[in-house]
Length: 276
Image 1: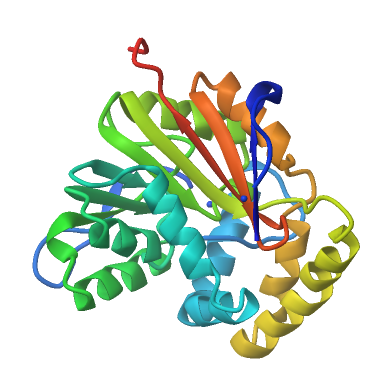
Image 2: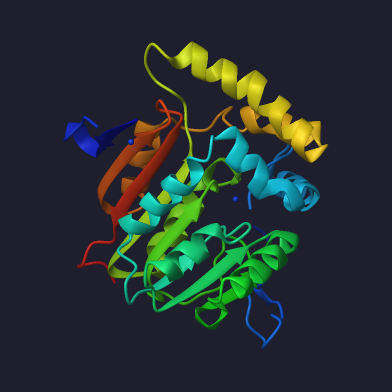
């Protein structure tokens, strides 16, 4: 089930960072460059708590995601990758987590991927996964902060992220960085949980607030981490407001598509050709 939206009252209808760039070694060569969880905190404290939480749950991260989304997370990632038209492109995966988006980018024909995350435990898992899938020649893994990207202006044809935005301490800063590192005409895709709209909102929130933490806690053994997931929406802009923020960062052609009864949104945009 999907619905669509865009900025400015146009078409409407069918819908994770701190410090220096640190490169980690991969099994064959020096190639390398997720995700969510902390109690109430601000700035550096929040970032440290999120990083530590993802390091705790990394071994079960993919399994929990698949179970609590009934396997639909794979389709959402495919849609996000398709949105940035990756064939032949140099792409930044700005919160690679366990490397699912990086793997899908390679499957869909990208020329190269820089897969960045601020949780190095996640990066190591992603590196091993990409190696097993035979795509390591096209992927460089790095540790770094999506809000202070260690790349020059105009370095990428596309920027993509999955389940990053709710975990940022400064969303506008990250969006400005995405705009900066994109080439003119480059594409952005942001996939994340969002506030569900409409009549199904109470049921969706019950599942998200009560059932998801239970599933995540049972499968991972870390109930605290998955109790964070519903709280990560507190203060997070809804899909319409996030679209406005993307436009305010200087990106154009901003649209979003909702999935999973409106609880997940894929925002897409392009950097105007006139941008330097």
